[in-house]
Amino acid sequence: MEVRVLLFGPAASTFGRGEVWVRVRDGATCREVLEAVTGVAPTLADHARGGRLAVNHEFAEAGRVVKGGDEVALIAMVSGG
Amino acid sequence: MSVEIHIVEGPIGAEIGRAPATADGTAGAVLVFDGAVRALEDGKRLRGLEYEAYEPMASRELKRLAEEVVAKHGLIGLACWHSRGLVRVGGCSMRVVVRSGHRAAALAGMGEFIDRLKRDVPVWKRAVWAAD
Image (cartoon, rainbow over all chains, first blue to last red; front, side):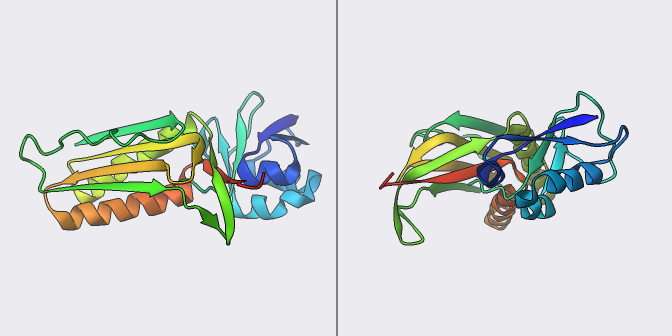
């Protein structure tokens, strides 16, 4: 399945867009989605390594299964305040 | 206990969150923290900082964090305003108001809230340089 991963802040600047699409197997976990992000966009490797995925606006464990229609976002290098 | 979270456009006005907080006599300590935009970043002159928040996750994470900190430190309340969009140099981009019976809990709670906000809440800032 195709998964859209939203990007913000430095990750979006690095990649040049606010989203990246990856192809993963049905039933893929967040860990696999993160690995796919790095495969598609090696420049995001540091962001993926230091970041976490959020699924439907909640931080997700690495083993969580991503389903079609989920909103997936890479939360990395936050800098609020 | 009370928790209040606001993501607001642009800088946070001087009057926001400064209503008398001790009228009922329960708070022995009221802390107000303002995060302000500095003029220089790495020696370069800024025009301001542009804040981006991933909503509604940012508000939810701020609320969850505030509730945890209030419970952990036994605070009376915690209110937070955070900017999104452009905040020019000298402007306030974040205000946190903590009310507690005693100062030690208020100071500890304030420190923990800000530290964890900077680590866990999906908000990003981008430098807008004066020369741009």
